[in-house]
Length: 242
Length: 118
Image (cartoon, rainbow over all chains, first blue to last red):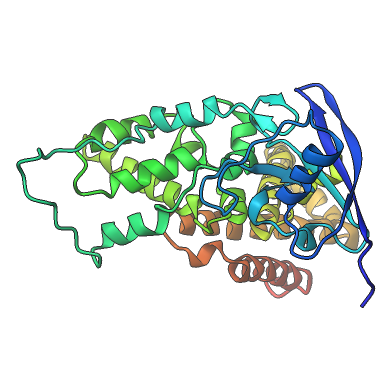
């Protein structure tokens, strides 16, 4: 097997919406993540580089970037997976979001859409009521389980062509969140939530490209969640619920 | 970002299936007026339509028709796949089902070319 080069040739986006790629030479190490590469550049080569991270262990969802054209969580993406033997890596900010500076994007629109999709739990019990007993085997609970592990990294949002074509589209993450709440038997806002996700910039706008499902670092399937919302909103419209 | 890098995020099977579905749909939409034009020959009498049908028996036209059948079959199987996804099938999201749809489309076009239905 050919030995990998000792130095990575890393192109990093510098600037805002207008900017350019700047090249950096970064030593290649064993077990090196893309976030390690970006951190090396900021600490050793160019302290002005802006990027975002927090937990470094794939929990917080803050370090997502576009690596060689694919949106990825950089703290859990090993260089060996993306660089190849020539050691070239291109790192850009996430697509479909305004760039604040360099690799840091403004995620306001992304999270505003969670709110627009009624992504908050609306309880129906008081503190005097007993705990709700939800069977782990119930079909609705299993649907929630399949979709609940979202870390809000916006990888799916950046991968979605429908978001690129229609900036009002709620996007895979917000709709996936709505799907978990629609299936939460304790929640009391089903009708309002189904109305919120039934508009023309919501679940029915999805073209089932599956880019969200393909790129989700948590291996979730927002495509399936959105398909579920399509069925549920269709049924609600037919029965006069919305 | 370079075009090659931009395309790299869109090389998965489901995206290719989407492209085939969309492009075959556009191809069929472009063909439809020509189809009506051909049928419209009948209004001018049987000779006009028969003349056109004789012309359409040329090998090159037959090959083009097989291409149309391929577009139709690819659009049909792609549409059925999307319907299955929306009905809740996770299997329809797999590469195996996408490959099966394409293989079925090619088989239908090949059978047309071999004159199975003529």
